[in-house]
Image 1 (tube, helix red, strand yellow):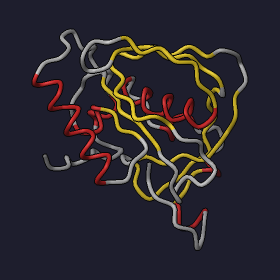
Image 2 (cartoon, helix red, strand yellow):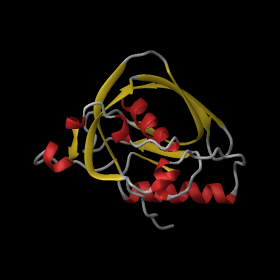
Image 3 (tube, helix red, strand yellow):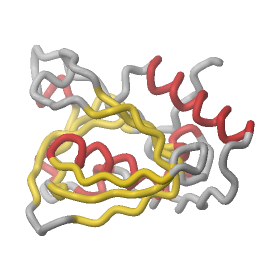
Amino acid sequence: MAAKTVLKMGDPRLFEVAIPITEFDTPQLHELVRDMHHTMEALNGAGLAAPQIGVGLQVVIFGVTRNPRYPDAEEVPYTVLINPEIASLDREMEEDWEGCLSVPGMRGLVPRYKHLRYQGYDQYGKTIERSVNGFHARVVQHECDHLQGILYPMRIRDMRNFGYSEVLFPGQLVQDE
């Protein structure tokens, strides 16, 4: 499998609401998940949503192991999450820097819930339900936003906290998520 082209901000497909999956454990769904995995891996991403590769279905993948790009982040288990539902566990939010493969070379300070519960299914139709916090919660919210046609710059409260990575973080290696 080859990595797919990731759509960039401005492409109208990124602003559409994705359609729920109705059939699990199909060759087409497994192929989509493989394509997404290869794309995320090739671009060293923390996550990827199907709409980012032009597929308007409610499928996201994410996962982070210890690496220099996320020195302070806890590990996030590799997950395929289909038809996700998210609920904040409290009202506590925090702002932190985010990037996106669909908004290359840029970063923004984005408010997100610190604690949340998410549920959905894997590609086989098995239920996934987790309560998470911190970086894990941020990654889930970021990827699930893509399914609602929301890109992280739309969540930034102060546009002075949005810009090119090399300007915001001079001399630092900062890659897109």
